[in-house]
View 1: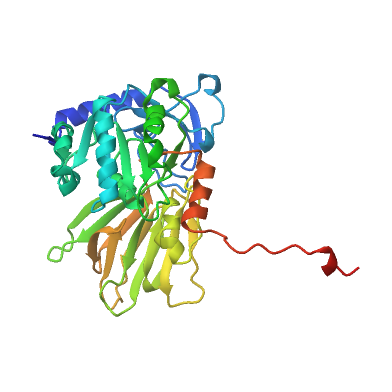
View 2: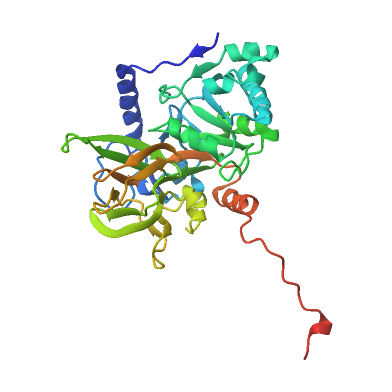
Length: 414
């Protein structure tokens, strides 16, 4: 029988937090990237101050991943192109996330997990929905591999168990991986087996060589990383009976948080504050607040600019605003946005976080949004620039048109 994952005890979590803090304090290497300039390990121990500069991110990725340090460049200025993955210890526990209801992906899932289990001797974690697939359950040759897997359900605690994440599918698998880790996220390697695959840069046919290069100690410092920033969204809901009581739930989103009019036929009527300063009102179908990673998702369909994931910023994009002058804007990554339903609104609004956790937003409720200290470290297939432009060309067909023909000699009039 497959093993099931149970939530860790408070003592275990405290122990991990303390050990992580000790590791973070051990380095003073200056790093500059989309999240700003900071000393390695300075992200998790200091309280957040109001600033337009982004908070320093935590650079410990899961249990064993961290940013590679070049001893020769320890005191030099390091930019995002020099972000590489390293392991404190050899990774052992790998989470494999697959696209559901896809026969091809299921076959690749079985091939990958069999190789990781039998040849790499790794411990596989998989969702209950993945191993419940008929092609998995009815394959007698796969029974041995399946029995060794650690099966988890939505809501199980994985933060102190996973060293490495592999996604098989499209962009939705990466978004799902992000949602499973609401604090430090392990390094993620995404294989393109979905429909669009803008965020999945690896091709599956070479998975053995690609994964071996990431896991082997001899290759430390060769696997490039893109630290994709996330938004920390606090949904503050006022109690209907006790107006002085509020309930706060927190979500970390990789793409965007959306506030829209839901099933109502009325316009949304929202107020937006930036660092407690009222900046504008929104009257239209809704509002998108996205990360640079999310700029190529819903935001670009609503008219926002496409922003490279290493650029620090928060995108604010209206959805069908009832105003010709309301254009999308990009704000500094460190600001704190607050979205509330106007007291003059004719109806409530609805919100969703990366397309999930849909909730109703009443008058008096609010959403506070800022950049999280926990990015998603994504392994690059080639490098940050090449991967992004390849995705723009192949997935969105950016600037594709027929080439203008040159003039022939006979067409020239001297």
